[in-house]
Length: 147
Length: 110
Image (cartoon, rainbow over all chains, first blue to last red; front, side):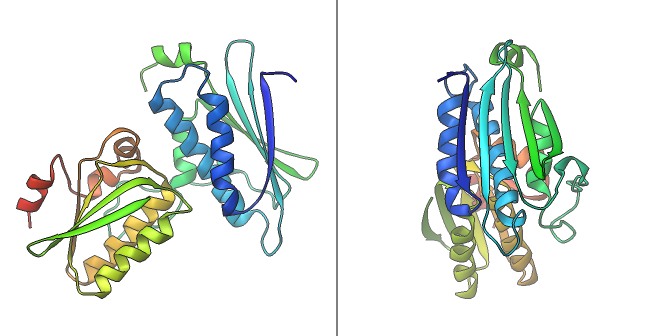
């Protein structure tokens, strides 16, 4: 088996969260990222998955495939695929984070985190599947970039 | 996630440890709602042992804060660190809530 690619398929349900995050962590923690970056990656994966668990398969059950791979330059790509209703997280509006407690709306933050924290996010709809790629520069590159 | 509560005069000090994610956030919210129902109005959330929080946790915090506001209550935070501090910062929660470095500093504000 190719060590640079690993996949897992889970039920699109909140009960799969822990297993999915553990799968991601076991892949990413050997790539040299610092603990802060590892935590950010974990956060973004949770946000994407929970969104799928909650909204992709209304009234029915479904699956999510998560795939991790490293590219030639040490780039980490996490691909999250579901066969649920079409949804492109890149097309949603950012929440207004300057509002106070009364005005602040509940929601939209998870997707905002993903767009803010990942180096690159790509979405495509292919064969009736949503495919979201979270792309991160290698640990060596991210260390030199001040965020 | 684990929640410990103690009373300091009229402030309920809530120490939350571990992770507040989409799985545990509903328990966190329910726990605090029960304290509000029991008449508590002043909350200090101690986060020195909290390792991780996602948007689900922030959602719970915001919804509790909105309820407290209608009851003229108050919720402040202390000892944020690491990823939790970062998440508060990028979400803007660091600006809408008051955060103290120590429990002592926080308690003085009530």
